[in-house]
Image (cartoon, rainbow, N blue to C red):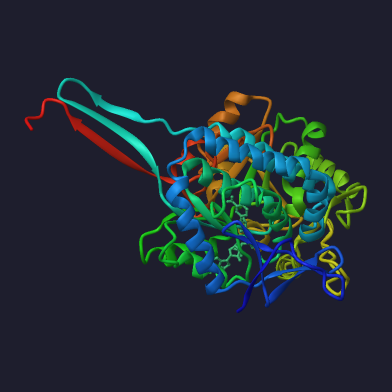
Length: 489
Ligand code: NAD
């Protein structure tokens, strides 16, 4: 593969297609081989990106390693300044960025805007995080102090559902901790991240942030690279297991944010009219392609009929379509592979004779990866659509009789990412929340993720956490320095 340096983000070819550049060692770089990026709303190729292999990865890692020598010594204030400058670069270009994000990811403009502004907000919120020394002992015999030291060069691997947020939530804590990073966006959604790379090229010191694109096959090269010290990965549980295996050769540190099959429990005192719309969006935002989206909703039998009707009635008013069109509430699935998987799950539900409250009729031959809003009426617990992470605009509603039964069914999953409880009785809801085997539980709201609170999965939903001090610590090693005060030397 040949690497050529370009001074700008890449030229448009004869077909008018632009090739976005990668950022390596402070320079914008393209390769001769490229990948095409498709708009999921119409399946048109909208741009190209470099198809990096081992040679480009080696360059990026070498740049990150070199930059680490000085970046690790910087004061917190200097790191904070850089992160705040990234926030400004994103925020002041938000209009351009959210449109680009919709064109590659599919999500409606308003949701794309929230992602872009949320990413800038995350930079601001996390810029002030510091890992202070901890004094373990301070007396006449000894001073013992724990400090946090950066792990080194980080490999960041990102999925396609929130490409910008996931990239930023890896870059920011890496920089704040004193690490440098080589980040790989998903081959399906690299454009907005690369545009941000261009915008921050002169904002971040050369080599501290490197962004390279390539096929999935670039991932294992990162995981196994001998000069990368830590992997921070967001994606599927299947890939997470491969990452863990790949990282084991040299015992790289890992943070894995993986899949979920998130259950919501609605108690009989919930107000049907008030919760229907909220429950709908807890499941269908980003066309259901959210790791923490409500993927199983357990409704008490006393309100099941009324609430399932209210959710289905609301769903019928929501427009599925091109995210760049005004009025679209649910965009297309992001890529063909995932589209086919969601179609297969719906097909399976149809074959088994489960009842649909809405949707269920997909036209796989149409243009664009559109799936109608599909709500199932009380399918059995072992239905594929209940037992598997759907990651699409498909939601099963299920009836329960007792709280113990609801908790047991919610916990009967290899995943443990998030969940929710809806009730006027918040004490009761907290009691239930404490029995759920998940990293996050919301009560009477959904999808609120604080940049300052740890976010991570239990069971097969992940290892470690991102966000907050706990997330930041994952980019560091503890080092204990002990001074013997009454030593005889
Ligand atoms: P994926 O695992 O297919 O891909 C994620 C990234 O890993 C991509 O950049 C891909 O190129 C790369 N990759 C693929 N194979 C690899 C390998 N063998 N080694 C290293 N890297 C490899 O996931 P996806 O389909 O892009 O994303 C959807 C999944 O991500 C869902 O399961 C969803 O729940 C999960 N997710 C989890 C969180 C979380 O915070 N827990 C957030 C968003 C998405």
